[in-house]
Image 1 (cartoon, rainbow, N blue to C red):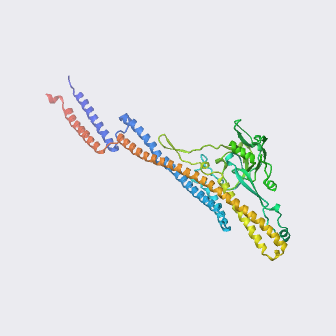
Image 2: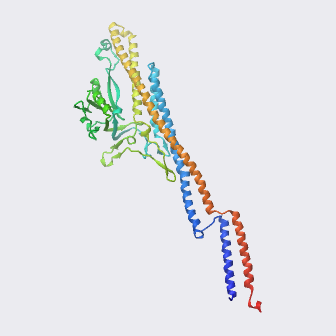
Image 3: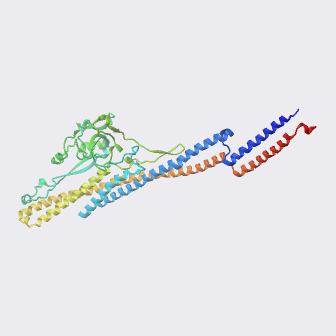
Length: 509
């Protein structure tokens, strides 16, 4: 085969260019310390790099953003729950103290002040927020748990589910003593029939008081036999229909000495109570009856619970029905994605922790303490009147004796009722506190899971960084060795080519 000079020249140029390309490639690798600069150089490395970078980017999102956000939310919730537990524990202690029968006037005043301050704080903790998002209000993170200000025009239509387990004993008192301020009233004394009296009834208390007039058609019970909700007035008790009344005012009922029939249910909008007759209460308990009541409340005080966080309800403040806002109570778990295919619930819902009855229980305790204080003040005032000269005649003294007997009886009733409420409060607030403790335990378990996930994400982040580096990066020492070899080869090819291409026909003559 005849080899021409042009063939030698072309082969030399091709070899030199190949060596030069290799030198350029290694020079780029030495500069960037990367195996490739374009996908076409090695598609396998390029594809693997895309996958690893995508996984690493997702890992960084979980480890550097989602997990810290979830931790912040959990820590804020934990702090609020801890405070709630402390507050409810303090109220529990006050109930233990109040259940004793050795309280002085100073003791009652101290208990009253403590309870009032604790009431203000307990729901305030439910307004805890994380970066402007309220942590106890489910998906409605832009709304506080309670009303921030007095809202006298705000109106809600609320549907509240109740049951036989909500029936409890309530004591009502008539013929309260009004300390006489004239000699004639003092001398008139107190008839036996006008002495303070105690009336014990069964009642179901709603979550709100000062409601609007109730349409009795909206008071329903679940008929197990029929499998449907029916009006409570259609319930049959011992052969008779239940008599439901909602048009009787609380003051008128008090003037009737708190009378209620055995088969009667009375609804009082002023107090948000259903007073239940004995036979009805017995049948509800035996049949485990479920109730549903839809009522309207206009006007809310600062610190009262917003209904949408606890009940099916409708905001009907706007006169235009088209602008009414309807809320459905449902499970609203906020979940953060903290790892590949792993979600963690970060929120705790107020309805699972803070019972809507806590505020009303505290109000009743407060009212009972105030009633006991007022009753003992009456006793003290009448005792002082007995020492005054203007009431020194026998008729006045006899009258004051009767007034004192009435006041002492009222004070005895007030003390007894207060003590019973405190005794009942021991159990109630113990349960409220246990609910918060259970929520803290559940939250702690979720925080432990988050810690384990964070550790795993940290390890995976390190692993993927290593895999990415192995796939893309090159050791500088290895590149220098290869570069030196390639550069020497390139220089050798230059020298060889210069000698080969330097030969002409004259060299062979």
